[in-house]
Figure 1 (cartoon, rainbow, N blue to C red):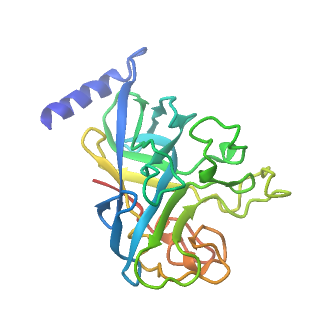
Figure 2 (cartoon, rainbow, N blue to C red):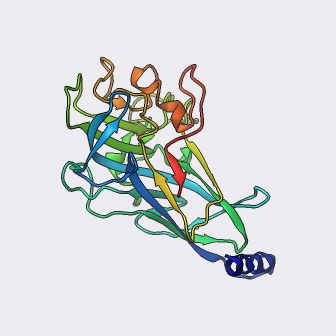
Length: 280
């Protein structure tokens, strides 16, 4: 640890030297449900307010505005590499492999962010879950990868599904649609129609702000687990005349115990500390 801190201190001192190359950084992520590694077709018990058993059928999310955090709180942007998974500072994390119940998915996986950052000593990581407004409302069939997946898109008005975590109860009688889906995206977007992009930002942008203090990309992993988010939701019941689970739209009773736990306000319910993402 001492040698590593000396190395970081040297990098920090050198950071002010003009022309010094940035250092590479890899940020590893892991998907879990109730503390267990996510895999298509695997059952997970004890979910929600009724302890439901579910099978995960999708697990993907977009992240953007990635930065390392210096000791004084300064955010230093990470320049994400241009790949099939990363474009213009937006990346798709994909933990499903299209097998078993993950029929909406694709075979390739992506569980890490790669890029470069100014050489310095850092004490944390920050990023947003979601797609920036200026990239969120185009035509996915014309967009570059990873923004070309229609399975991760609502429509031009609403834009992309920032988070898509789909769960299907495997035991017990579920009322309403067969499945409980956690889909996060922008809502209350003003445009002429569903195929028209809004001219100004949506009333509910629903971009999650995540800051992980003490995170070291060389040794740490960012863990995504929806179990704490849905802890007070009944995954065997769906509010009448609403989409299955919580899809972020106003007026959905299934979202009242969920959105605050994503660190987002929902109607008159204030935001709380986000519970979806933590460092390990």
